[in-house]
Every structure is written in C-alpha cells, then in structure tokens.
Amino acid sequence: MPLIRIEPVRDERSGRYYLEIYSPHDAPAPYVTTQPRYQSAAAAENDIVAILAAAASSAKPKS
Image (cartoon, rainbow, N blue to C red; front, side, top):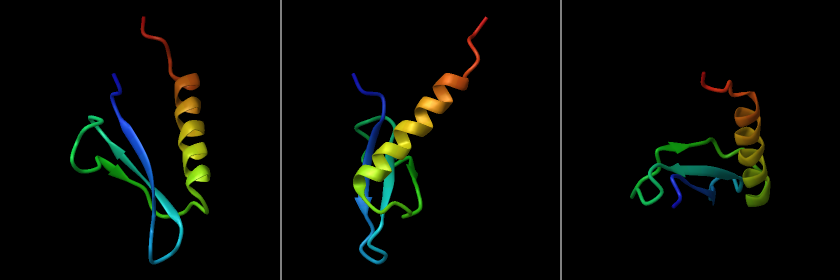
C-alpha cells in the first residue's frame, strides 16, 4: 500500500513543473509543494527519485 503520492504538475504561468507530495497518498490536498523549477515532468520525477535515494543511502541504521 502506498504511503505517499508524488505528482508532477505544470505551472501555467511559468511553463515549468513542480511536485505535489501527498501524505497519506489519498489526502485531498498536498502536504508539500515545491517551486516550479523543472523543465519537464520527467525531470521532476527523476529529481525526487534522486533525493529519496540519497536520503535513504545516507540514513543511519537504527540500533
């Protein structure tokens, strides 16, 4: 079962994409919204995957 939902959205004013992150995944409104800084939806998705991967690889294991 998904815990969060991440959606790239195109900003009509700038033409760039931003991310909406929903927690829980079925929340009616986003928990976090980024600034519109991505050239494409794919670039936004790739960036969030890289951010999550970097955070997961640098997380310290619980003792």
